[in-house]
Image (cartoon, rainbow over all chains, first blue to last red):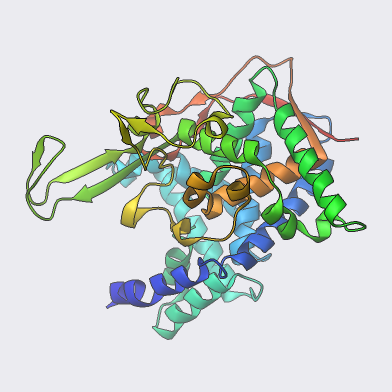
Length: 155
Length: 230
């Protein structure tokens, strides 16, 4: 039943908003976000020697978050938990038991909590892709905790 | 949100370690800015970011993005056999799983000349790739392929690479993540200079243990200095 919702409702919604015209607002938001973030980071890091990773990765992560989820997306708070999850994602895929991947599991759980809070708060400026997926899921009885993990899984 | 940041990292890291650094990309971006300003007198790019990104001709940046993805991406597409089949001289039975390693295509010397070398201008010099006399259509699959291709596969609007002489590569460059990288690099290069901190000696390598999971993470790093352009 739930997988039917994903296949029959969420995927078509996703495809519609990633279509030639559907994606344009996301790209516009992304362009503005990355411009603003570069300005902020540029002032903060002017002339300072920094690891390239600490400059590039957060800017690109945050700009994508803002483009899809709007400015209330918890991009700063979710960055480290996301990295904790992502850093050992390959081990999870390889079948390493979760008990050996504590930071990975905790990172994912923190992401879910942060996005659960996000979905419970105002986020009208999120992309139509996220808003419409959210509406479909709410209409079908998904609670926020499940909603946060499903809606965010594709990004 | 997972792969594009690492692709952006490698684009900068790999180019900074080349003798000419980011300068060829800076020059191309500057030309695009000048051209846009001539066509839009009195306008500021920051008020027309999407328009600028959508119309700027940036063939070198486009090629550099594709080369970075060829060089740094490692994706496994997994397929389950539904009916017994013989393919490429091998027999597969129902429920067998086939792992398609796209990186082996990316690094195939018979498809890509000097495949082990990072060549930002590769896709400006060559538009069609072949092996054993046959055209290889899927010579670049950084986001996977087929039904399990990354989410942005349906993105499809007129892209500057079409005007930049890379029409054959357009499907790849319709991907959202490619445009993310383009916007990031253009805005970075128009406003800042980035150079390696000569005091640091550490350089990044690919985290090979993440083979098959997307754009590879860096192992190690390099220190850089960011400055506003005058």
